[in-house]
Amino acid sequence: MRPIVGLILLALAWCGPATAAEAPYPVGLQHNVVFTETAPLAGGSQLMRRMLRPLAANQVSEALAASGKTLNEQSIALPDERFVVYVPPAPPGPHGYGLLVFVPPWEGALMPLDWPPVMARLGIIYVSAGHSGNETDTFGRRAPLALIAARNIMARYPVDPDRTYVGGFSGGSRVAMRLAMGYPDLFRGAILNAGSDPIGENGASLPPRDLFDRFVSQSHLVYVTGDQDMVNLNADSDSLSAMSRSCVLAVNANISPHAGHKPMDNSALAEAIGQLEHPKPVDPVKLAACRATMDARIAAGLDQARAQLAAGHADAARSALLALDRRYGGLAAPASVELWRATESAAR
Image 1: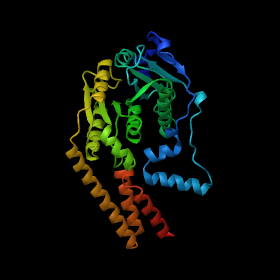
Image 2: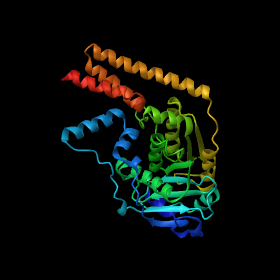
Image 3: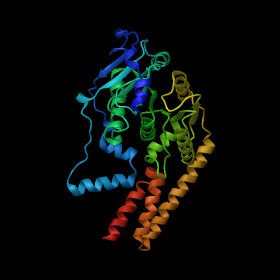
Image 4: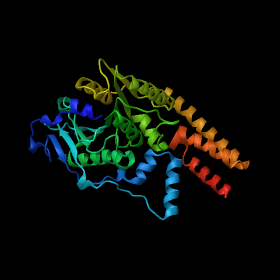
């Protein structure tokens, strides 16, 4: 990733005009920004509920209880963190600025060189954290830093909650995908640039039902990958298929011509934001039918686990619950967790 940073990300040279009287904080491109407000949504218990598989979260909780320890709710020491922020020089619209929280694969707090003009034209703030690259822990840093960035920008500037998005490039895109699913009450969509994973099965966990219902009904995903980036085009194909099987239908898949594995250019960015802000409607009949089929399969899996447990086959019940947890995550909870605990009691 680091050669890409050196060749493409030269944002330090760009700075738009500032009209500080029009905003409570400076406008234009700002480096080494320090935030002061923690984010409740970035707490350890929220991250576990929204982004971990329920049986894995249960295992963590049991291990903490057995050791007499408690979950660390805030893993980030804010005075030590630095962010890059770009604020359009023009005043915000009647509903506020848009917001793009960007998760990078690199370590620096940077902005691609040709993105500020797009953000200025569309009235969207950009924010990204430093020391949040691919070598950094997702749950300990990358996800909390993105959530803290959103919280602090929304505290400093008027932001339209219906135009609040998360995005990322390469490995950062994979984190952004998980944040979009787990935090649909914050993010209304995501730009997944040259990086994606399947959901369910052995991919990213589906969040609890209340969050997943909100995600499929109001969030939108835009995949953007270069036509020469075959590894990530194949990854996108797997991810899109898994999204469809899980009833995530509000999706666009864009292929950038003559592009390899690099951040999207300004025209691709503008197209992706346009698709987020003017999404194509989802067929409600198709969505309802898909959800009914998925709910029936979850119910059948839970019934199978109950039958195995009642017959004294605790190991078989656990196997059925693990399969449910991998495929449906939070949609099978809390019943899956309650049954798992019952199998542990039966084994004692």
